[in-house]
Image (cartoon, rainbow, N blue to C red; front, side, top):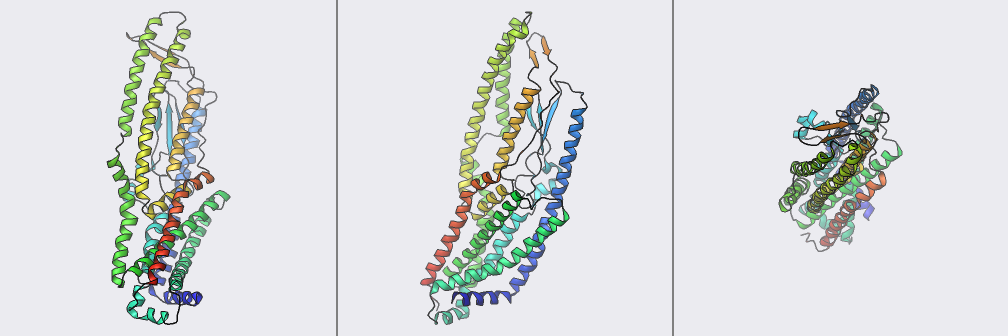
Length: 456
């Protein structure tokens, strides 16, 4: 009986104008979005390799000065950015290591495209999160309430059918109807991207990530199908269902994800990076002043270079400890703030989908943390291999000493490695669980409430 009811639901939807619009929407919007984003990605990849080549030529020129030399590291764009742009265009495309200032951020793609930064971009995630969720609700908003208005639900129940089977059939029928256009659009999009670009989407690592994104997209679409069914069961009229659903959709898809960070910042404020850097600079100048006093006492001695080492090491450790404490306190507060924001945002399935897609596309929070860690490691390599034997001491009274030419024979390179697939999967477990939980909860409530549904 479930098969017959499912078939009935499919046939009714196929001959409905909604299905034709959905097919056109998916077969045009998905391929077009993937194609445009792929072309933008191709330009960024070309820019990355050109910049890398020019930097290598600069290093080979050999004309370097210890005091002015800057080591650069370049971050390759994520090849899966076409699915979720995430933080890929927000993170710096390069970093610069200097002797006195440490790490400086290089170019930011958002600076090159302020129009996109202001108005935003559409990616595959946007289509799933906004378009497909809305379509899913449109297909089920009158699944029960509409049939009640037409009187067909009483005819179906007159055949002594278990009510839960009707809910299952309506879910399966609408899910299958949505599945075909979605797969069609995604297949066309991937074919266009693969044939028009040198992208490595079919590599084992990328393919696994794409498959996971596809399956999770189906879970998300299924969730809004179940939401439509649930609202259709608890309302008596179709127009009431659609109004109620649109209100919930706006709250879930737009309000909660965007307001969660604002609420967290209000409830648990954290110092800005600018204020943090000022505090660090104050500590650095204070330590340098104390160090300068001790160095001044030994400046005129013949063995100055030998005597300065323990003094410099002492203050280096003091400064490192103070800076570490400042950073750790800031990280702890940011972590608490992020937990508050994530907890609020995860009441919306759209936020969970965003977290999942961005991590699987190597454009999420995990990638940002990985980039910061890699930048710090690169800084340590440069300091150990290039700046280790150089120093500039300010010993007061207008006296200063500069020693050391620097070692440029083996300058380290910034070999950035993106977050591995296993780490990405581990980071999305909670969000995946929440999507499945929302699905199960909504479907169970729909089936349970329909048992006592008044069909008159």
